[in-house]
Length: 271
Ligand code: ADP
Image (cartoon, rainbow, N blue to C red; front, side):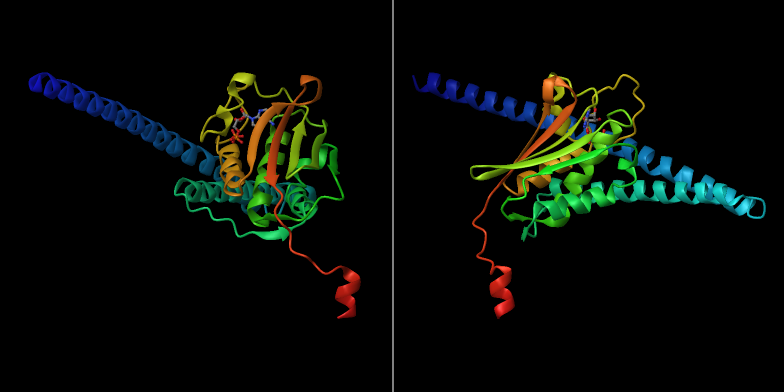
């Protein structure tokens, strides 16, 4: 009997070791996949805007004397837009590193959602220039305990996606309402939408849905970063289809905290 028990123990240990080995191999393969994806994304996403910047700068230099003002402006704009793209990419990489290291600690403050959305749409002005932006934020929303800089990054990434993945001229809507102890926020577009089978995976790092044209530039980091930031605030984020199954709605919920008793303006003035 003792022998049998010992044998069973040995088998159990062997099974556990085997399961651990399989898990380790899976983690190693995933790490390798992420590393390769990061390197190819890094080289592509750093090089593309750099090549455009170098090209525009050399033209400005070489044809300094002969360029018409409109041509000069065009080249300067290219440099500015591509530098902004680089900046966004580096910001996303920094956020991703912090999320990966579990070091993303929101510096929360009591903020008005409208201010954060306003800051993000202001930053995204150039992307939004060819389409209507519909803001439908309940004016009576409570103040929320959020890190305004991180949340601006979330809205900026979502507006960036809404513009990248929907036709020029179609509307982008940002909607927010209070639902009990949460505020629900939606960023919606009228593009082709995200297929149901991909709606969870698009929040994985480097995951990109194979678009019909396969041309849209991107790293597959934006939504992973949004999820990291929203979850660090105790909220949730998911992808859904829009009204009548048209387009994409990214739905965020953030908890309503116990806002501090702020003196109203009358009281503040009296002091
Ligand atoms: P990126 O846009 O850099 O590829 P994201 O993490 O922001 O990375 O998005 C992951 C993928 O999800 C995108 O490649 C795209 O396939 C899909 N996606 C994201 N937002 C939208 C949207 N608004 N409409 C359609 N597809 C989207």
